[in-house]
Length: 423
DNA sequence: AGGTATTCACATGAAACTATTCTCTGAGTTAGG
DNA sequence: TAACTCAGAGAATAGTTTCATGTGAATACCTGT
Image 1: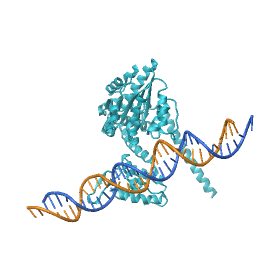
Image 2: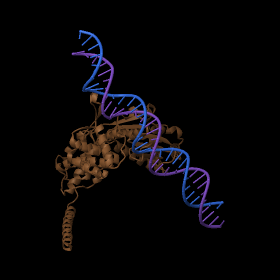
Image 3: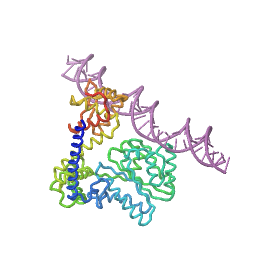
Image 4: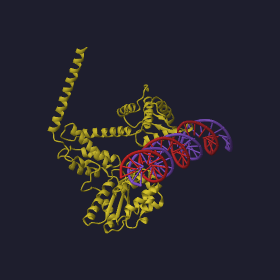
């Protein structure tokens, strides 16, 4: 008995030492090879390059609209539309940076506040938005508990402490409206009537061009005194953007023929999203680096595309609450047997799963919403289908391959910790 | 044959409710002079 | 008497439930030829 144990321990130890040897060897090799990156940050979304290619015109226009601020006159409010990855945020940040540079040089009382309204629990409600802005003024307020009026009082007081030209940039403003309705924007657009010394200029950025349709016309007219649309990049433009960034990010001669072209083509297919193109290139670079290759090859790019898609799905699933997991699990289980299913079936399976995971089941109304949410997240495909006399429901399928599916299923298994096997 | 009424199985909207997190306020308690 | 503690009220917010209404096309039924 003791002998056997000894042998087992010895075996484990040798395995470990062997593994250690391999890992060590990998590290040695990794270090001996120079990284193919020279400045990886240049491929990240936050990076602001010195020159923004294919957006010169928009840059000029934004600058022209906001220029009066330097003469301490209030510029028109500006509204910017454009799909994700069309350079809206980049352009506005660049222009504001320049304005600030000139202003600080001449000690002009100009302040710029940038808020991303999408950030959950940070600036996605009227209250939180104000608190977030106030933080820029060095005032900290509780995250809850105060009446909104009180927060406004502090807000006005802080803004009016001394004469100031304030430019407030609200990125992804549609998120704010979606959640809180018109009131937040209405109050902000009317801010200038309540302020004595300070002038507030609003710059709204939004991905959804249809967004203003549901907006109160009064807000709409005051918010979009000037409008600017950012068109998507085409494949050629994406290519030159990638060219610019890759020359900053990678060492010379790292790119093989055709990688940038293919990368641009991938992204152009998805409505010209430059952010996605850069992500793709970065991941391809990382994969090449990890494989201790001295060049980024087409294979790395293909692999990167798969990895990005898989990571995107897995991350999205991991971030969902438990009830969403239960619904998704019901969908996965039912789709093991059939190619498409309907809401009612999902609900009854979901109830069963809830009982085996000892969770209190939600109502069908709520589950219907959850299915809609999962559809928006791209975790299920659930278009509404009318079956004539047999009713109207969602036809649900899964939009990803078997490999991702099984990963997701095991992730859900773990999260739900189902006691009795759910077959 | 062609028209229109019905029917199904949910989708969708609105309002109300619940639970959580947090601040503010004032009453009660305690410690120190 | 000042400092501290603690419960209760009030507010914002997220997540749900309840109730009511809407929806689109297959099918059933009716009408006129």
